[in-house]
Length: 245
Image (cartoon, rainbow, N blue to C red; front, side):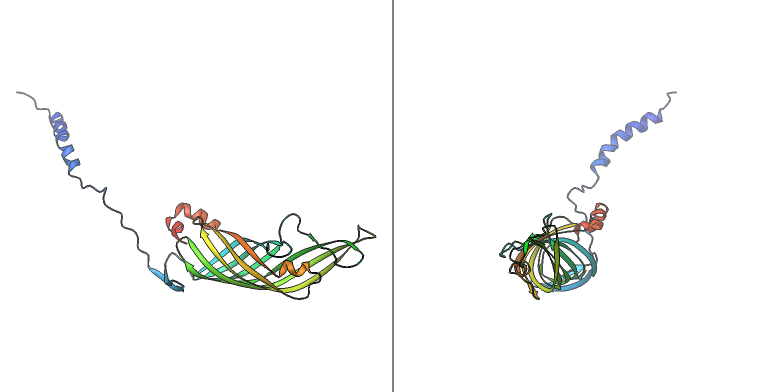
């Protein structure tokens, strides 16, 4: 009697029907994965109408940015550098605190004709205060913002005597200042924004010499960079963070 090799029979049956089972599998190449739908969280008004933000957007968020302002239009070039620390409310409103000072290694600027008996005079200007901003137009990668600020400043004037150049006298002048500006923002990445705009700064207070008021009372252009290190790290692990703006 001939012995039947069942193991060999099963092997040939498997080879016969395996291609058939592969061909019978449904083709999923043309199918799209269903995207997750997020529930609406809050709605705001812009110049383009209502804008609804989903649950990924927080109604309160802390924001920081580095900011620079250049008064090229004034008779004396004034370059300020500073930063902002504030709260973003419902995505379109911002309130916070800002601080600015003369920019660069040669922060002290020489002025002439300050007072008699002085050979050289340097000045350093700083100001700080509160700001408020409102987003007028919002798109996935661009934004138009109008804002204003009010604060206090001080101009430190150091005068060196003609007879004794090594000796100096310090005058300190306080002033109030207000700003109005319009700026646009571009979303470079999910954690970094680039902002540029134009504005005007007013000074309320008595500042001697024509140069001192011009460094404060002047139109300016500004450029700032906003970065969120928490979003930069979190976006590596979460796609939702990379999509939120």
